[in-house]
Image (cartoon, rainbow, N blue to C red; front, top):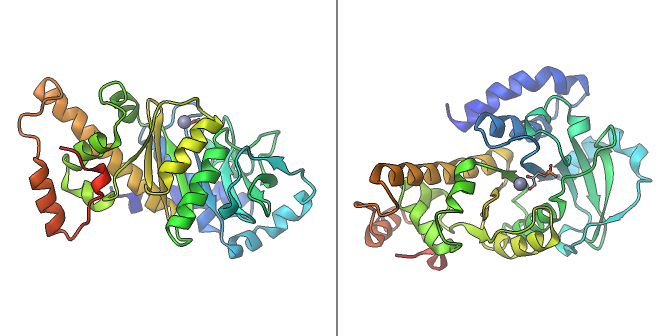
Length: 298
Ligand code: 13P
Ligand code: ZN
């Protein structure tokens, strides 16, 4: 089943619940809510692990005005980071502590709309987080990544998806915190990898989850990478749509799983027939792909 099928199946399953809230005719909202369900089906979300954000278009914000007008008096709260590129933007984000597979079942409780002020340093809740909830503890990281990707993509990138695939966390104990080495190993695992992430993977060394240090280190990587590994923690994948971000995460995780399987078959990390870097370059040239030299190792 490819990603499109996943989304179609889950869209049908979630339809009734989302419709009950009057949100069913907004497929963009359903797709966002269902990111958690499709990630859960992959085993990428344990307990409250993972979160997501989507930067809304003006039309989408207007479509929610019926739900947001009563919340215009909510206080502005410091984000802990200042991201001018995100001034006046609105982000749909998942709630702190929520189980990602439940977001589509109760969108008004497990997600919410955060408006960012004109400086990019404060946010306020316009809708959602019903029952006393609040935005994800990784909100600062979402805001800095959204800002960096918005600038890098000329406004096209709108989704940030964070998940905890076990293979990504496991490899943190096996490979060094070196993004060129990690990227090149994954590029060599399957021909699809260079097509899907030719700019390579960003890498942030192990940091305290939810911290400003993590957000700041991630901001730097997000300028040049659409997918970022948080060492010993998980993965962030970004995209122009939910399918785009999820598909990117799927390919990164699959390449990592192939690496894990190859190491298991070989009885260790020395793979006897590992693709050479010359072969990798030949494939890239044949596909007209420009590999990011900063992520290319032997
Ligand atoms: P939240 O429940 O606050 O979103 O945290 C989950 C997580 O994955 C932290 O990195
Ligand atoms: Zn996490």
